[in-house]
Image (cartoon, rainbow, N blue to C red; front, top):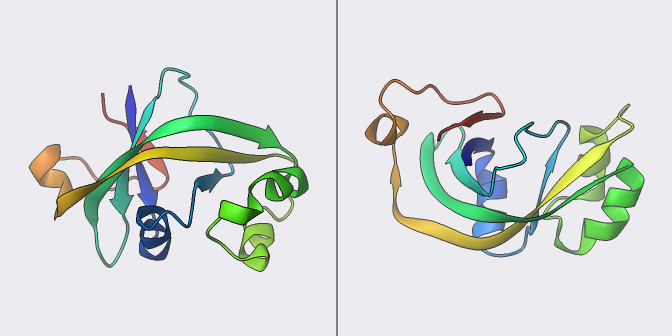
Length: 124
């Protein structure tokens, strides 16, 4: 099973260059069968740019997740802790086997009528 995940363009760049090996989320998808994440680069790009396989998923306090992932977080500590402000739980999805598409694709080319997800949506 795959999901389409909205990611800010600056973070897409960090993923594609290998500097960001963890994607942080406040909420995680419910289906444990999800193995692949398709990356939708949000505005102003608004294209599907690649995909990656899910490695481990870390669930812990924001402080503990940061300690385990900071070397390959692709974000600043201030951004990270602001994102998880007032949260007891943080999720870090390990990014493995990145595939960057040769040409970014529009959502309509792949899935007619699909709207960009706020966070993520199931696509299988």
